[in-house]
Length: 142
Image 1 (cartoon, rainbow, N blue to C red):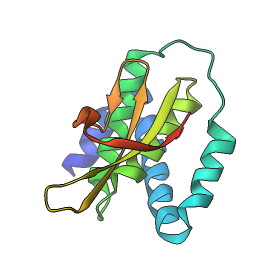
Image 2 (tube, rainbow, N blue to C red; image 1 turned 120 degrees about the horizontal axis):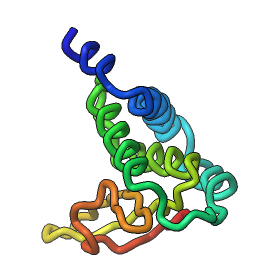
Image 3 (cartoon, helix red, strand yellow; image 1 turned 180 degrees about the vertical axis):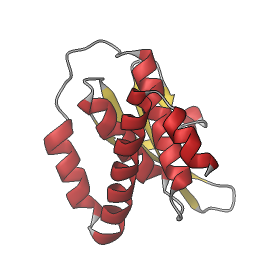
């Protein structure tokens, strides 16, 4: 009941962004499990790789997208991978005309295992990449 009350107390733009984020996070999670990633990458490149004419986008709109994707990922009963969350945020930002770039990177850990991470970068803001440049970029879309 508390979650429902919080949802209804949100401003209209945040409610819409949250609903969009839930749908996109669910879809990206499903497609990450059901389809080979090369097809997902091809789709993202063909649909969302073109340049966006705006400078850096509205900082408030970027923040709303970031918060909405985080809320949607917490709401779902399964763990959302950073790649699924990043794909959802990337699509939401690009739909709003905000230039965004989706990155995927890897780094080698001390025990010689490989760690992967995905994040979205807009003009100034970085969503989902708290480690900064610790990862070597292996994929860039946008």
